[in-house]
Length: 461
Ligand SMILES: *Cc1c(COP(=O)(O)O)cnc(C)c1O
Picture 1: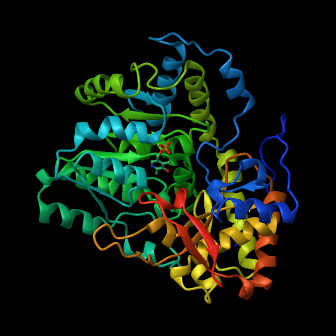
Picture 2: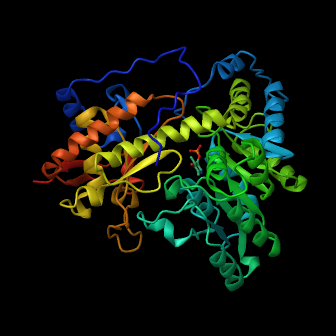
Picture 3: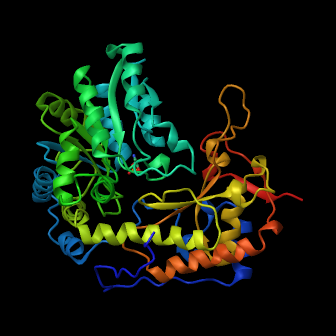
């Protein structure tokens, strides 16, 4: 790869938010007080926060200026119409309803589409998405292509659904037992891996053949479009807005968390291409759950920031810089001999903790142990995506040992510089030099549900 060449950010910094690296002794105290769980740290004790890319981005001067023309009318706010115009122009959709975030969109739309017992087929459903499918009595099925599970396989579009399996599933179970097809772009749960245009089109054609709606889970639609431009034949000379329009043309609607490619700190939406009847149902449903259909849980100023964010995110110079920064961190880690999941996806680098710390058995949470060590070493907060997150089998109560135990380093948009990436890589390189000393963890407090958020640990031995 030539990815390490210098690529200056296409913006300069006007406002700064100070961050502080507290002394090592204080970091040790802070993480111990947090029960060796980085979710329980105070954010002020974190130097570089790579917990998530959700809602952690920086807004532009144009978005901040937009806040001042927020129209907080209960009904018919001007900012709703500005946002509608952005969605029309960028997605090519006729209708939309704002929601407070992505899961709000799922909560409103899914009960209108799912009858109890029906399947929802997708490449790989995000966790709140799966939860909302199940809460509505549906069954979430992941049909991502098998190669996504192998970190060593290089493929440009590891987020692709297996189209043969998709059609076979519909034939076997009957189209009447399927609620809809949901394509997540990029595929978050597979490491931010992109989905090709060919694959989105293929899923849409299968949907049409069996008369099933096809939706996009569009949280990172612009990052996906950038990968299509860079990696898919025939798209190298198309503009990002052209690619985005084509992607959305192969869908009937979308749910979107605007906290990612919306470039805002809070927000979401339901988009509908042209089904007026469904739009009417969504408008009725959104009132008791999120709010009146022209605000849906957002203030006028928030809608304005989102209307502008959607236009900014399809700027190719921004996307090139964004994706490059993530790839840069991946390359730095590889240079230091740290095993990562490849290829690097759009929003995060994943360190393979099983390969990095082979002396820690999976029952002692190697990726969580590495996460704790990284915080102590350099004040960097990552997140475990492995055994801790997987939880227990609801029937047997046994620990589930997933194939991969990963430390995710998630990069917020427009927030950190290349020097920050160097600091993260150097911290991990110092850990690599003494990695045999790192001890595994045992859980001393285990909540029944979503245990990773509040679990507490001690070091083994
Ligand atoms: C973040 C996310 C969601 C949920 O959105 P929230 O805004 O966090 O509620 C759904 N799907 C995908 C792919 C996401 O990344």
